[in-house]
Image (tube, rainbow, N blue to C red):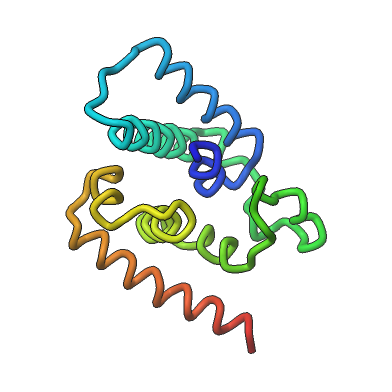
Length: 147
């Protein structure tokens, strides 16, 4: 789950694996106390998202090649393990972060709106609005590809 969330953010297997490793290192080193298994899962997702954000802000990221610049025939390398090839997933990954996070957690990780609001530290109404706006953008993206 941490790997999938990380990969959805950074769109790169190696970076997602590094983030996965860092999340578990922090988990083992700090040994935080959790109220429940859901709280532990939320902590891991929040930590992964923060590490992804830090990586994406780094200087190295400004010198990388964008996903859109990768030729279509080479995108087969970027498949998520255990998931079928899905054009919708690629469309979700192309959305801005606030929509991408909400849509990914809701549809691909089966989180409720309340759980997403806890994980992302935002109001439930904001999550609902981001889901609605993200769906609208996704519909435009996928609608354009279908023509």
